[in-house]
Amino acid sequence: MSKEEKEILEENEGISLDEDNSNEAEQDEANSSSQSDCDELEEKVKELEEKVLRDAADYENLKKRMEKEKSQAVAYAHESFARDLLSVIDSLDSAASLEIDEENLSESLQKIREGINLTIDQFKKVFEKNGIELVDVENEFDPNFHEAIMQVESDDHDKGQIVQVFQKGYKIRDRVLRPAMVSICK
Image (tube, rainbow, N blue to C red; front, side, top):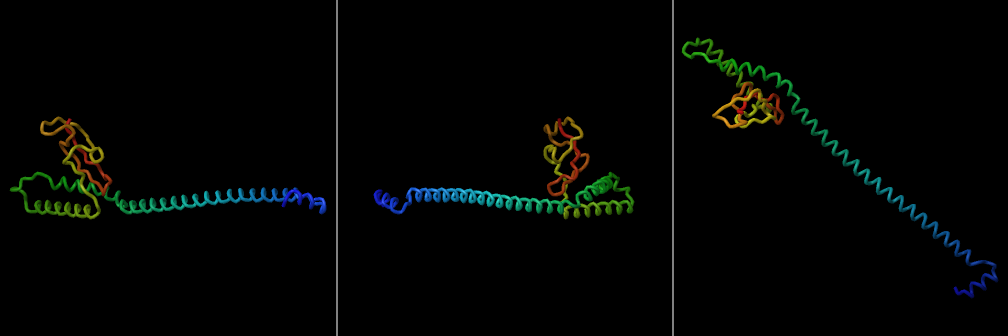
């Protein structure tokens, strides 16, 4: 519509076309405002979706950690019982290692010694079945598995090597039940 036509319509009808334009401007502004509100809501929805995904991932991680802790609790449930048995096997080892003149041993003492050795073998089988094993003392001192109770000088050993074992150490799977008590070379 040309400018002249607008002027003629305004005079004849008494309507200002500028008002129509202002109404259109108001509508455009309202549309723009609702569009920005819509954008804000979409942004909020995205944030909430991300939060839900993070919470779900956190829940899955917690679930996995609880399963791991549960399996470890089951695996190490008999740890204190096994620790209590260590002193028993130590006593049997000591009794079995007594130095006695074989020629003068009576037959009953030989039977007792055999019984002790059989009991020790049974303990070792039960320990093996339950994942309990001796701590290795053939290599260098390792504070994770050994407890040094003294240092001695030795020409036969290098510095830091284990010279003598005073008490055997045991571990259950990857945990130490009792460290080996050893002396090490200075």
